[in-house]
Length: 201
Image (cartoon, rainbow, N blue to C red; front, side, top):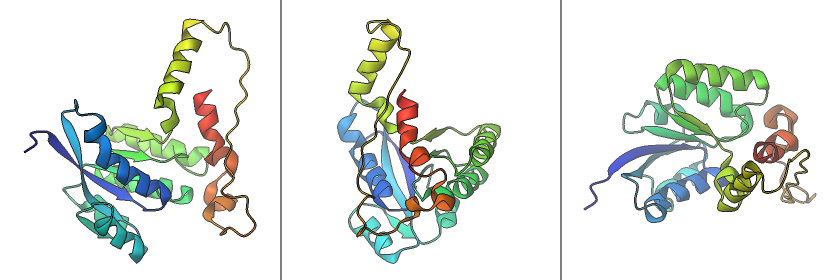
């Protein structure tokens, strides 16, 4: 039996990113056996019944709820992944702060700089550990590139060109999702996807 500390995890919204978070939590112990802790998938929250069913049947969550507020109120949830659409990030992150739960929020933190500032200020004031979903920065190739740049091996970098190639939203036959709505996505593809490029640069 494992003597590692188990950290109770809640994942809010089980779209593509939420499912990826759930699978990633499950593989932490396998990929990083030296850690003194492992994730315990306690609760998933999603308003869609099919997603809740998948949470417990396929992803390994102990339970699922329709309302994310129930997840945040659960005393067994010690940390939260916020994987909802962009326009819900501020609302959910502020609720997580109110509940005293450390969280990872997918980027962007909100659909405006003002929303992001409110979340950052609230989390800092509450003394919570948080993270924003710039996950590419920890890939081995990126860490190596960072080393090359910082060591001066590439000379003085004065210009960076970033491409983020993703065609999943280009088909006219594809579903119209929240990503195509400025109100729901924020600044569109620049904020939603190219923010990765800005972060890496």
